[in-house]
Length: 187
Image 1 (cartoon, rainbow, N blue to C red):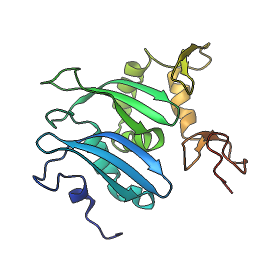
Image 2 (cartoon, helix red, strand yellow):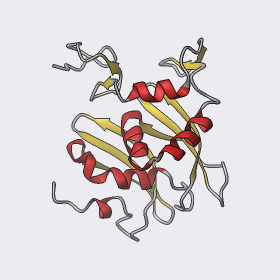
Image 3 (tube, rainbow, N blue to C red):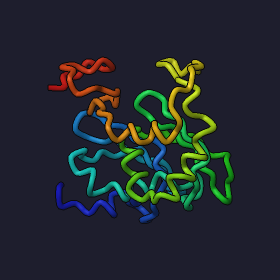
């Protein structure tokens, strides 16, 4: 499977259209992707996590697409909840009537950083500064107010230094034997 053409994996097997990824999560050594073709509907498939660098551009392309028509869409809102990034994209045709997308945070950040220039990063920080970091979401997705101690730029810079559990995405220091979020053995 290492020689697989990932450009074809992310296209609808019936019509070849690239659809919108509406769910992407890590499950052990695989990534589970749920994607929607505007013509043929939803489908689900798995790809090996170890080959992430080979298909990251295709994930990026599929995340920023309209759920209804498959056209390129722009990021409207972004909120990190647990191991996921919840995205809301806005399509020129369907506006903001699209469902939220739930993307594994670490994969989303890698995909976003892959094509982000410094100007894009500044724009993205401005767009996200409305929701971050004055609110935190607990496991029940209830919003809890907290004091903001760092600005968005400091948070973005510190993300590159953080480590995450490979199973659930919980932040770890790298010294733990077991993940505090899911109990997976880390060492």
